[in-house]
Structure formats: C-alpha cells, structure tokens
Length: 453
Ligand code: PL4
Image (cartoon, rainbow, N blue to C red):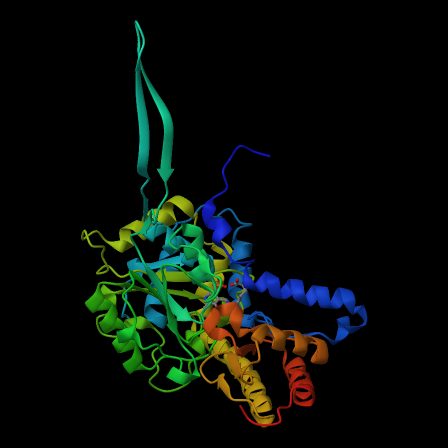
C-alpha cells in the first residue's frame, strides 16, 4: 500500500464506465451459456464495422510509406495538427465559417472532451471552518504553557463549487464522468441518480428530445450533442438558435459535440453549431473522423475554438486550449492525418457518403422492426442510433438482460446514459447488414408487445 491519498473524486463515480460494463455483462452471460457464443449479435457499442474504403485507405498507406523514405520522413509534428489538414477541415466541412487557426486536430473527440475539461479546471474552493477551539492557559513557575485541550474542526458544507455544468439527460456518459473526475461535482444522489452541481436537462419523448432550456437553471458550461447519442434526435436550426441565445444571455460556454453530424439527412438541420449566428462568441465544437470514415480504431478528431470565445477576464479560451494541447498532447499521428486529408478529397467524401448510407439503411431496418412489433421508436433518421421506448415500468437494464437472454442481441440500456434514459433502449446501426437483419428477426419473435407503447 502506498502512502498516497486517493483522488476523492474517483470515489464519487457511481460504478464503472458504461461501455466496459456492457462488455462485462455480455461476457458473464457467455461464461454461463458458452453454447450461445456464435449467436451473439451486437447492437451495443457504436463501433463502425465496414472496412475503410479505397481512396481513404490510400491516404493512410501513402503517408505510412512516406515514413520509409529520407525525403518523406517526418517526426514530431505541430501539436495543433498539420496546416494542410486544418485548412481542409475549415474549408470542406465548415465552408469558411471558421478559420484554419481555430481548428485543433486530435486523436479523437473522447480525449478532446477531457482536454476541454482541463481548460475549465475543477475550480472548487474548499474552506475549513474552525468551530471550536478550547485553550487553557497554565502558568508554571518559569513557563507559560498553552494547552489545546480540544480542537474541533467542522467540515460543514465546505465545498463551494464555483463552476456549474449542464448536460442533456440522457447523454454520452463522458461529459458527466469527466466532470466528476475533475472535481466539478458533488456526490451522486442515490434516489435521483444525479450528481450534485450538475444541471440535468431532460430530453425525452415528452419534450421531443429538446430541453426546456429557458426554464433550466444557468450553468457555466453546457454540453450539448446533436445529433444526439443516445436519443438520435438532431436539433433543428430554431432549437440551436435558442440554445445559443440562452447561452449568450447567461454568459455560458457551450461545448457542442457534433460527432454524428455526417448522418444528418433532413434538409435544413445544422451540421455545425457555427451555422448559428452568434455561436462564435459562445461555443466550442468537437468532432471526429471516427463515424465519418470508420476511424474508431485509427483515431482522428478535431476541436474548433473560435477566436471570439473568451473567459470573464477577457482572455481567449483558444489560448488556454492551445496551452493544454501543446503541453499535454503531441499531435495526431502523421500517418492518420494523411488519412484525414484523403477523407476530405472529393473521392473520400463520396466514400464517406456511401458508408453513411449503409448504416442509415441499417437504422431504418431496426426502426421498422421495432415499430412493427408495437414499440414507439425515435432517432434513426439523422443519427445511427435507434431509441426504443419500453413499456411503462420496464427498467432499461432489465430489458437489456431479457433481450440478451432471449435473443442473444446486445443493446445498450438508456439508463446507462443518465437517469433520463431509463425506460429506453439504444440500438446501434453500425453492425454488418446480415446481422442487423437477423437481429430484427429475433427481436420480432421475442420482444413482441401486446399493445403499442
Ligand atoms: C465506446 C457523442 C460510441 N469506447 O471516437 P471518438 O473519441 O472520436 O468519439 C467518441 C464519441 C464522442 N462523442 C460522442 C460519441 O457518441 C462518441 C462515441 N460513442 C457509443 O457507442 O456511444 C462509442 C463508445 C467508446 C467510447 O467510450 O467512446
């Protein structure tokens, strides 16, 4: 045992991270039912399954090959990413709405969320209140002795959170879990399953998956993901205009996760928060090639921090993010950035469209299957996730277990994304087509509802 005190924030975390927990339960089921191993179908973790298409793969291969030549070899690169890739992202994906210098290329959106957290810091002040000190003074012949007979320190409501954060409920668990690790929150309330000092913004079928933002308390940092994981809801232009307006009025910073932007097919739905007027003074956007191009294992993402975004003292958020990137990150792999450049060629963008068409056809099959057996189903039109409403009173972890046992299909319980997700199941459309068809068939046989929900 070391003499080092454990970071108390880790003790606040309620259980393990969601996705390994899904894997643990699946493995426990298989350990008890080894004959089912070949039947398992995963509609669980949102991980891409199609191979990387030819042109994009060519970009990866070419940049790897260059490293074997004297002329093509490169070592450490700029921590912010290759100038050519930053420029191409700004041009091809933002059509000039942002500048190259505002793009920070990275190893993925999940890691960026933690790095953004490091910019905000824990900002927790702790005070120790000395409530009672009893001092007795005794006088000896040659000595004045002061004896502390009792010293009582009271730690009463001593944690004063200077910053507050807010996020959609349900949402990708990384926003909440990293906030807890950073010390931005208090403990979890066992009844509500919500952490102290997080403003939860309910997003369910009842409010069409968009929070009543004007009537929700202010927070310093607002996390918002659209198209949303897990609900699959993509916020409209009007909704995002309201979100930006409210953040601006309240002096909040919006962290906008657009990792599923390429799945948006509905006309007029924004793919970036910077399509909204005023967002440059309010928002940071994180994004990723993971779901665009099947780079979940390759690892490439980016963050946009506009020049206009500043802290209360007038200092630029961009400068502090740059400080984190240069100090704690050594740049995305040069091989991978070559793949990113190929993604943004016309041929690469066409290949990305084909990948997304394939996954969206899967989403349609899943949606149709669940609707045909009586469920109310959301998402799946502008996002690769289908969000299924369970019958009233049915917990999402129970439904997860039942489907695993009856159909050998792995899903993700909505409760894993926050208390607002209980009563729903998330189905991922990233599985291979034949397994999606088979999963639909099994779900239709085993999950049929007597009445529609
Ligand atoms: C499992 C809203 C998936 N082990 O790949 P990245 O880091 O560029 O992007 C991760 C990411 C960022 N933002 C949102 C996401 O939904 C994701 C990926 N989420 C899912 O099934 O919900 C993969 C989860 C992976 C993880 O923990 O991220």
